[in-house]
Length: 514
View 1 (tube, rainbow, N blue to C red):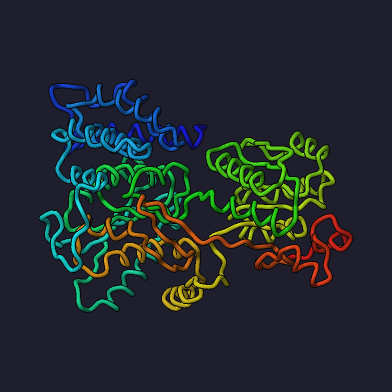
View 2 (cartoon, rainbow, N blue to C red; view 1 turned 180 degrees about the vertical axis):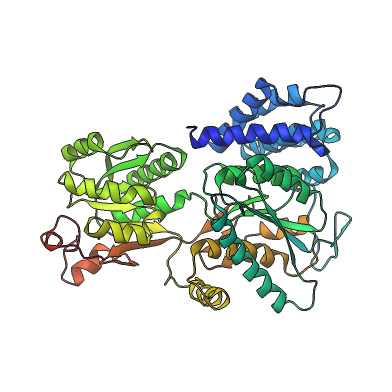
């Protein structure tokens, strides 16, 4: 089975193949083959990897070599290379070099994409307030494109996301009678990245489409994101969480992104508030796990703590004997487990089995799960984790959305619908009213837009990166509650570790959870 990284790069290659076969900006001319050469794919892969890791000099080199191969025949690859080349140069203070790069390849880049690069270079300023035109374009866009998995294995999840989007649009239309009603243009990607890219290009070619929402899976979301970045179509991904998607530029906005800030905040809280000193890390050996583990370890050291063990495990394993035997030697104060839902209960029960029941468990957002609480029982009780969602969190609109959803559909609410609702609300908040123009919408989205949604409190940076408020939470007797600092526990007459933590005398009397 391919790793997530290889799947994404395979998807990337498929999209580029598609761009050469579907016409438009990506058509190859002069008889060249309608597929990427190995060198082109390699340089593109290297360039994006270097850029995502902050290695801007290496990224510049890779994209410059790609330009030497791709220009002038493949305008789509030229645009992507110039786009990342400009961003890399701006990141290292080479503004004149960024301008020179754009001037050298401007004629081979389509006009719509030229304007995106000119915004990036600050050659084009924001429109005046109330100005009805942007770059000579009339405000004619009044539709939202939606690409979701509506058939096949994950169709129920796709339909749940769509239900949330529809609620947001209905709410917007009721509250904005002074403009044109928003219409949804809904497409089914059938979990196929190539189909998703084809649908994305079709919607991008329609000037009445203001923005795009999609998809559910990481691979299909990446396919759409690359189209959005290349065509200047604002995109909000409601559920995708693959690291790297949030580095595709200011057109791409991830609500459910793997956020290193969650790991940083948790590490600071563990050292400063819980008064923990020694830490072990046991993370999945994938992009998400490595990103969170690296961030957590760095934040622990910066806060004055010590990481005594930093280990990984394969996604195929269900036993953690080697890792836990090593942890027995160090007896850390806490173990950071940024695992996903189906792995958490396995690891937590084995931590207890190996005599580490008194070690504090720390986790990421997937610990906020009914499955974890129900199946984990005493093994997870007392765990502290960081999440962007807390149902009782001040400022969140979860209760309002829950009431709206259950009144409309006469069944219990789900978080997929809530993420779909937030995705549509963010785009519509940036639009203000319809009709609009996608460039104006893109500019408004990236102007530090602040939005309180059902699943999080979001704000969007100029780069397109979506930030979220962090909640530090605890699993306590089957409930998710705000985590208490060490001083609060002491004031209540408790120990630094509550009696309900697995391995304590009270916990051994029996499970606290249903």
